[in-house]
Length: 319
Ligand code: ADP
Image 1: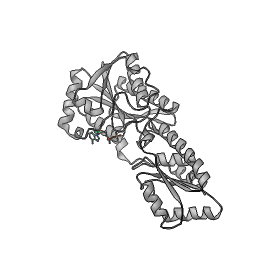
Image 2: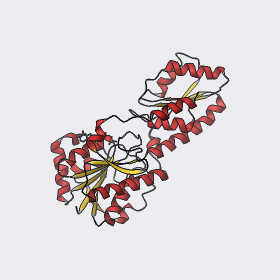
Image 3: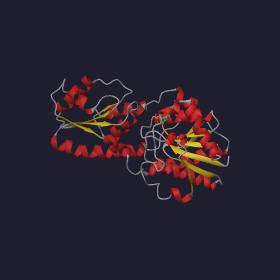
Image 4: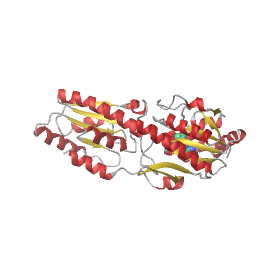
């Protein structure tokens, strides 16, 4: 390998820039030429590929979003379309690619790996929903953004004696809701991995009110239901004054936390190490503070699991 490329794909996450920087600097440190592909897989097809130098990734470690832009590119499922992307890379003499993104991006990367481009995936998503790693790049930042919002809402919930329902991101994965709920001291956490019994939630809130509890915070992952729906459901069972907050895209933005920057730096550099060692067709991750690689097919084998012990703890602590 003499030349490799890096791209970011799917939903952006804070820390992607730090990962790009690590890939670029580690590659140059090892004596490789490194290229940036703009707009994810879309940029492969349109040949939006440029050589990057050390200075091109200066002053980005602290920035949210991604310098290389991201895009969804549904047509990448088509083998003929991917062939064009492979040809464009080959034209530049590039035969290896680091793909920073989520589960969908890994699928594109796996395909490419069987089609003449050696690929490595780096987990970049706020959802923390990828197998093969304890944490994804961006999760810690999004978690802290949500916790900050929950703390602010708690102040007003206390003052006005109300039940607040906070809707957070997570279509299929409840990690953000769970971690933010534990960190923010929420009374109730509703995650897609568990059937939600709103009647039981209502009974708990009522019991709390009978004990003299004046306010309560419910965190609901968007995949369960909307905050609005949740409020409506609750009021079927109890007479409670609710206020709903949808945190929305603010969860995806902002400067990455120190933890996300360090994680991104380690994983980005490790991806280059693996390519250097002739390894590909896998994604990098961190497990018990050790860097690991996992073959893509193993990653796709099972559904991502929520931390059940943490979920149980959240229920024990919110009685
Ligand atoms: P994420 O990577 O955040 O999960 P997406 O699911 O939107 O985001 O996937 C990002 C991109 O990866 C898609 O727009 C598409 O270009 C590519 N992709 C997703 N699934 C496949 C697939 N089965 N085969 C090839 N490419 C895919």
